[in-house]
Length: 303
Image 1 (spheres, rainbow, N blue to C red):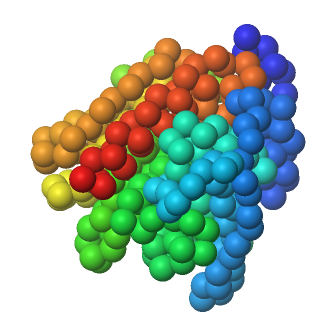
Image 2: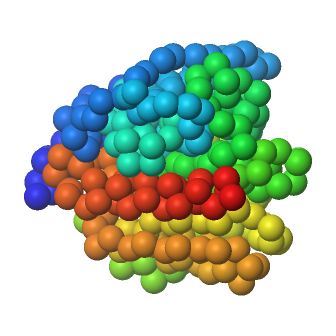
């Protein structure tokens, strides 16, 4: 099943520049996404200091009234990934949740290193709240979601919304989020080679994303936060064969200990699998189950 993946790796820091890998990422995932689903799609953007944040907004076809809003943060190690490479994932999540999905193309390194992605991600949440009526969204029912590095951004935005009096979130959907690592966990050692995503690649991505910053900064690695209380409920997806597995599970446990409701769902596959629905069947199941969790969270938020 995974022969196609390993036959044409795209993450090659030794022989490729970040921009080359970004292009290769989109090409690589063009045929690997979950099955295409119908959605009404529009493009939007807003200005930030030093650039523009581009959005792609998905709405279930013929859905009446104002719908809940999901801010979806692209993965790709915070360096790669685009609206196109995450298009089918956003369509499936839109259909499964019956919500508006606002896909956020934050500014990326190396052109825009940390904290640009964090600043843009939180600004996008505020933009969606303030402009909800433009796209038929309900600013009273909002959630954040993200895959891998985008999952880290979703987690950080949940903290920022709490700290800065931002929108009340119904759920944070964290798909094997890169929340930071506190050391050599068992999974970091067990799956260090031959399981798609390796420690050296993780280190390289951090060096591009935050070259001059301490990676223990909670805005880079939210696992180093001291206070996890009063955060929105979390639906956390774990890949069992992933170097990040134990750190993701530890983060979920930190949330639980602080009194946050956490639903942890595990799949016996590799990091990034939700991008690979054409070859990994668990991707569609994971998105559909996440959609069900979002429906339940939005229903509770409306009560």
